[in-house]
Image (cartoon, rainbow, N blue to C red; front, side):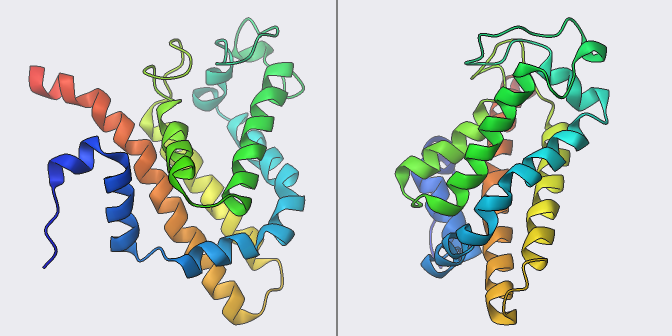
Length: 199
């Protein structure tokens, strides 16, 4: 039986990622399958991004998070959620970020830099990182990740890949998205700790 330092899981990102990848059996073969999908997936990233933002715009609970000033964005912003439009510059700015994220997943090596990047994706949606005025509730992040996961998996199913390649690609992305989900939720758990101890 392998011994795990559970306290270290909370404080050492590399150790946490290594544990998760070992437990989920996220292997070099999985990474190869993800990279192997780049030629098919990268060209349709704009359609995936549009689908995500069309979904976000359907709910005030998700659309409202684009009204406060975004980290790294210096342009004009909408006065309220009702005046925020899909062709506003801030939405174009955020779409570019999501597009780069999706391309990064299928093209970049899964090294320490990638692990830090995946972790930053979680941190930037909490007040601890990014914009202080933006705090996306975990329920909205879970909803978003569920939608993104389904969009990616349904896209893979539509590519007409050989059955063995399709199966390995689906399994690889499923593991990757669970890894990403953990690196999102861990930042919400960190936020909740002081409240839990105070109660």
